Amino acid sequence: MGNGRKNSISCPICDKGTLVSKQGEFVTEVKCGAEKKELRVGNISWDECDACGEKIFDHNAMRQINDARYDAVGLLTPSELKEVRKKLGYTQEQMAAFLSIGNKTYCRWENGTSIQTKSMDTLIRCATRDRLNELQRKERVKQAVDYLARLREKRLHESEESQMKFAAHSKDASSSEITKLGQKLFERKDK
Ligand SMILES: [Zn+2]
Image (tube, rainbow, N blue to C red):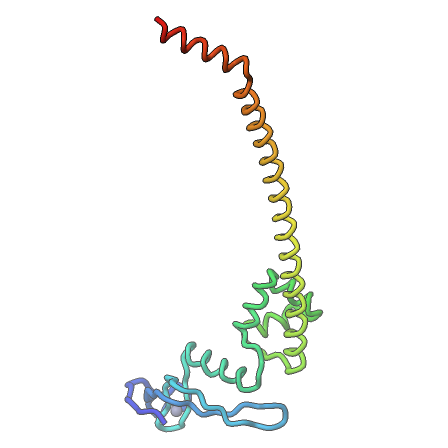
């Protein structure tokens, strides 16, 4: 796996070897309950000591590996947790209270310093899905109420307008006014 390119950096772990840049598939293992599963993560870059074999990952590679770890055991990743929380419009404190867990515990899950258990993960999915459905239902009711209010306003406006039109029409149709106007026109023509 990976192809090597020697750096001139000496290994910070053993202080004997030299770090070699590698890129490719990284193979590790992941705990899944009591058993361990092999985990393969593609297209990863890391530095590896040619003496002690220590692997050093940068922030990006760590995130790729961690995401794959969550994926392999079917857990929400920290960024997925954050996304769900934002959708609910909660702060980290509110989210912790909503799940009835400690602030610090929730924060650790969201920044990936600890991983929620499978049962907590299931609880988070169920509780947030129900809450999101509830919010969507409330939003739909609000939209319907707004729509009806706009419709009522429009109808009121229209009936006012038609009353005005009707008034204008009856004024136009007033026979005495037409007669007066006609007389004026004929008087002019006669001159
Ligand atoms: Zn080393």
